[in-house]
Image (cartoon, helix red, strand yellow):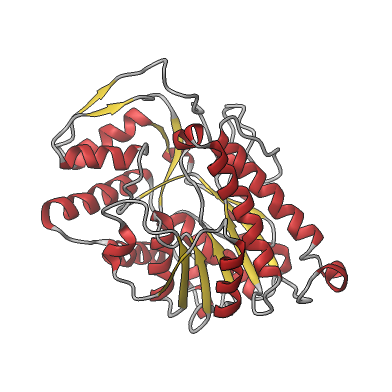
Length: 369
């Protein structure tokens, strides 16, 4: 997979103890990478990272602490950095806007600056969000060259993180500027990745639809649905991760044309409303009971959001593997296995995902492509 590019390489992952970061570390371990994680302690109990027992180097630290972060990166000497550490929740950002901006904007600057001063780093994949775009709630998807924006603090912080990424790519990782501005005279290829609403087993974050549903089912409680008509580009966590790993491969190969921003979203059929998601999950786990209770007291959240992934389709040859039905079925199965039988099905899910990708003959499954 991925041309065996990660085998034996040192890979530094910020936010490795979070939901998406833990899945990425699992996959990197399976690819034979030497993974180093840097993150705050896992944000929930239970949490996916600790359940996996990966045995990777795990450094406890905050991306807002530049000194510690720089020391960790320079000590570990990675060749590639995946930056996932973030404050990832919209509703939390209304309550804690300063923390959100410090983590998502200054934290990103700290990561890029620490990498700029580390000679071993050759590539960075900065993970932001589909919410980085100025959302006008129109019916067509946002492209990579659409304006950055953000109504709520979380979305605005991700738009800012994209602007920071573009700035560093132009000012400090531009080969013509290296002798003047780079302390290490290091040419780094930097890409950013914007994914939609990522779901899958092992997420217990507050104020997210699927974790809220699964917690309620496990306690035999009724889950309250606050925005039943909100539409999102739902996708299994492994789909955008395959895109991130493809990007990393291209950057490590020195392919400068891939050092840009990229969308990784599902097919159009996976853009469905919240109420349809709940109905699908209920068909896989009948214990689910829910109630729609809209309230005027809820903070603003976008009602419609869609990504245009034509660029990733045509230039990277990336495609999602699982449709919405399979995604929701696998997610429900993971939580059902955990709560009813104490099983951790993550590696099984990864194996099944790879088998589906092989059947589709996807590029990243073909050695040498």
